[in-house]
Image (cartoon, rainbow over all chains, first blue to last red; front, side):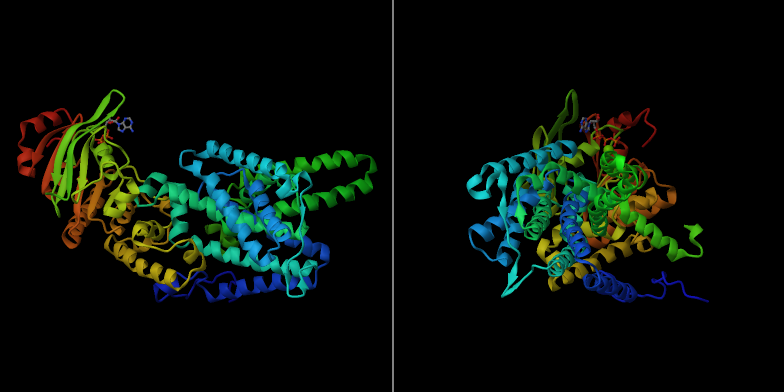
Length: 356
Length: 256
Ligand SMILES: Nc1ncnc2c1ncn2[C@@H]1O[C@H](COP(=O)(O)OP(=O)(O)OP(=O)(O)O)[C@@H](O)[C@H]1O
Ligand SMILES: [Mg+2]
């Protein structure tokens, strides 16, 4: 009989808790992960610069989306301020490198740290505010931060923004698409592994507890205020890191790049990908980043065939974007991650998939 | 002096005086039952002890320390654990993770150590996993270890609720109707667990329960609440024959 390649747990025994608690318990899973990582590491060698550039943007978005998911998906605190927090990361790195002459390698983690502190500050109202009320408070953060960025001309360059340079190691500059892709890739891998670990240890579990039942969490000894603010801190750190990576990639920061529509896009990423799922954030980031690109090429294609319709088709792009998000919310609220798990389960039980 | 002292505690919700100058003492190592008709104020009393309600008046002392105004999470660290009447588990987490959350105050791993899963973080997780496995073993939850709690039967959820409190290794365990809604077999199991907890771990237990048979069998002392007032206190025998208690329960479905 042919072995079902999706069945991996049979015959696996974990003889101690350390082994049972390993992040990827099964040897075959470890191999598969190695293969996937290798695939993504090798892919720039065969792809065009344009495609590698898109992949870089997807990866940066994924880092930010994981950050947002830590706060919203895992800890249950809605934030509409991600756009501005990306901006804090981008501007911090820009100011530190261009105005103060710091090296990228110092400015980059500092950008994360400073965004984390700003995030924690704006997270303080979370002790008293929940749900929609908290969302409005983070909206205030978005408005205030953007206001400061566009008005503090001497520091931020006002509406014109600031120009950044690509990072360097010695005489090597991360100028090519491929080299920047690898930089992003390393940061993304660290972000993924870090957050997977976080949510199987004490602090991550406490975040989930706060989300699911805050009263019980408190009675279990979890300091609600501390953990809510901590969630803002950790989340904003990754958002800030993503902002700095993006800034040095596009080599410009300016206020209109961090508008509320960016915040909404990131919320869409974690909704479409799956709230409270690290890999879901990744899928959602890829989906939301690529969808406009795909729609754009469809529009171009159709406009070639029906020249008069160009204007209508461009408008349709936004509509399709909205409709896809609504369809996700209605039909698969658990997002792409759930769809992927369903597919995996289907094949795992194959050919008895109907047993469910 | 007992492990817990409740002195003149009153709490008012609008027009309702849910607790009216209630005082009692719980002795170290005993099973202390709090009984009374529906709405008597039993859960409100536990809420005052675990810090979810602030008494309008009065004071509560735990191991000699005045805890009336300190936050619930600090009381947990002092050694008070609670199983809720209405299940308050973390439904998306597995039984294991729910119980590991019970270990929260006894663990130290922070964000950085956890995220990088450094040696000491891993060591701590494994150490506490042993403690949690003891509880799983004790409450016979092996078969559902990795199942999300939200998908379990009501009886099992009640058991996990007790398990999570037990995982905290508390000095004072508050059990709010741990047998409510269970069938007889499940009730017997739960009664046996409570006796075992009490005997093996010497944990002081405050038990709220409507099943008088269970209460009379398990308790060292019983306090009876009625409309927020403490109307009787004593050993099961004393309480059983107290005319005020019989009166309070007259017309109630639970005859003493
Ligand atoms: N948060 C609250 N707000 C308003 N009223 C409350 C609140 N908590 C309790 N009460 C009232 O206090 C009284 C006592 O309620 P409590 O839940 O303590 O009773 P109980 O003895 O636990 O009853 P049961 O056996 O039904 O669980 C009830 O009249 C209840 O309506
Ligand atoms: Mg009650």
